[in-house]
Length: 556
Image (cartoon, rainbow, N blue to C red):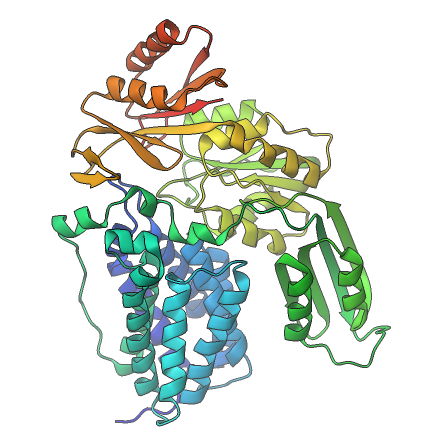
């Protein structure tokens, strides 16, 4: 039987079942993003993201599908975790904008919404990379737009979107070398396919109980050191291009310098040509712009065309590359009196928390690898800080995008220091100056990130071979800046071998952070080894209490 309209019931069912379908298959999605250590989390991040969207839809009392779409987008935005979760939230930001005036949806409305969602997501990423979740979303949208030319049946259109997204998913290994090398599809793209399949099941009423589980052979073939570097992490850049962080708020229509009607797309396209890190948000009354550019005056001139500049801000800067909040370790309570700076760091472990606080961090969000905090967690920490301005250290490459989304959801100036490891975060804090301007601190702290090498010791959960290195299940791996360099059955020997590969003639200080599965005796054996072999180096041992990694080691 043909279905030609999506009402509140159908829309709610689509989101609910999509949330359930991804939740059931989150472990499988995690497996596609796995190193031979238990830290794959793309599926978990995307599942928690879509659950936040479903919660927002479920709590809405409106029968207006456009309003429900807006609730979905807001829920996804606030709940976005990890890079794939952030991109998913952007897809449905465009989707919801497309349907905001619709009481119900036709097949054409649905197809166009997916298409608009893809356009929004591509624009949200400064350097879109094919072979990722973006490719999967694009193939799905294109298939939907083609199908709607021949049918008004929304179920058939949704079916085409699913088929198209699967075709896009199958193409990801041929589009992205890191995936082709290991013969695996993009994990974020697989998560999106599960969401789309859930939408189809919600429309058709035919709900599947199918759960995907890879076998040991599949898992071995999926493992590769480069793949552990999250595919979405390639969305960021180290290139220094634009020196001024420029913001403005425009009151639309008031004292405009032209009669030209405001169009978000037109303004965005113009600003995109003269800058990057661009965000343009607007409603019927106000335009808010954030952009990194070398031409602030051109930004303001563009805004004045449409109305009065009610707020402007410019900071001299240097643009660089760049958890679930634990209920037992809540964000530090806000002080009673407003403070000048909040410095917020993400880490996991009581020892790490104390170390960060000793370095000047004021608030800690408990999380990190396998426990990426959401955008809302970061927003909540900023709001509770009672500060006039804030710096955020994600300390994990998969948290940086969620942190950046928080910038435009709070009322105080915020800068993200793009630290990708705990060691980088601690090194960055040594450059923090409470008397300096926000962007000056960001620049100085990010400049220090390359001065430290980050090492991790953890146990392999399966046999495999990576870059010619044979890894044995149960052995200890030494991972240096995201690349496995050592495999050894003895944790002390493995740690010493890793350090030999990290130390060079410029090395001065070595810090060993002892995790939950490490011990002080073994750490001291390593320190004694260093004293004997590298007499000129200074070695420090601290209790970190971090999970997953018995030892985190920095060499500076």
